[in-house]
Length: 269
Image: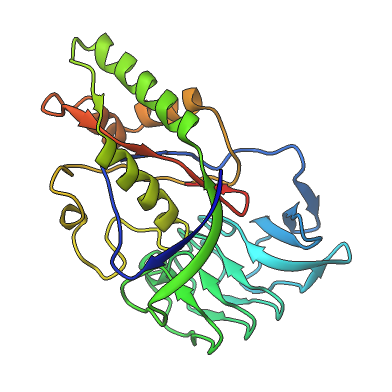
């Protein structure tokens, strides 16, 4: 089922969400200092910067293919880089692209940029020099927000969500806990929240309100995203290997659950 969802500032959050981690994908290509992925439109996304330069100027093309996107954790834990210049033609920066860049002070953003999944100042403590381009339509962070609504294209995956509920209950059974029952209102809230995550990746509502304001049944939340669709069993494995996510699944006071899975532009939320 394919839907176009319009999400206004101040929307939906729920109890549990699909947790998907970045994983290795066979089609990734390494060229020089960059590993990239071919996108459906003929352009590429940078998956990883493998160099060690202090001043990095990302090329506009790699192997004659236009660079339009930085993926999740593209520069992760690079403590060497201090300056990054991003190329004209780049339109998208995914969440945590500069996570752990502890000495990064300057990012030059291109005029073509129109989407940033998460503002990077929280993960770059020394970053002080950057300018938001006029054409930007969305940064999913309460520190900056230009638009009040956005249209997104994607689809809900109810089968994976329901299978994840079953697997979560299997984990609860191992601990002698009662199974969680699917609550329809939480399920629909979770589906909408999963869609919302595709434009606003944060443990808060888009207007900064607390998550609990969306549904009086909400008491906890897990969120996650990944570049490619993986199985519900892998999702559950990742949950259970994370103390915080595991604690949510095994919380003995919980009685009901809603899980949402939304797929947009090759990424699952």
